[in-house]
Amino acid sequence: MWIKAKELEANSEYYIELLAKGTGKSKEEIAKDVQRTRYFQPQDAIEYGLADKIMHSMDGENAYKKRNYDEIRTQRALRRGGGNPQAAPSGR
Image (cartoon, rainbow, N blue to C red; front, side):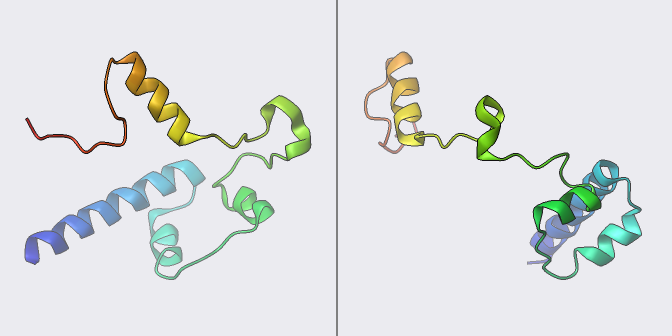
């Protein structure tokens, strides 16, 4: 349990460091802000420094396009010459 607690602490510190670099905020400010769950509206995420811009479906090619991940996985498996892409690895 102690090992897991130390891993969580190290991961939390790394996460805070990444957010501080990405947002330009201090590690102390980020550490305080992540103590509680916080949900951002798009404009709030931009102001905080988590996002660069808001994309709308009306933006055409630049908009997020929903992908069919099952189809992508099947195509990749077929290209690799694999069998069933849903099958669990054999562990060999």
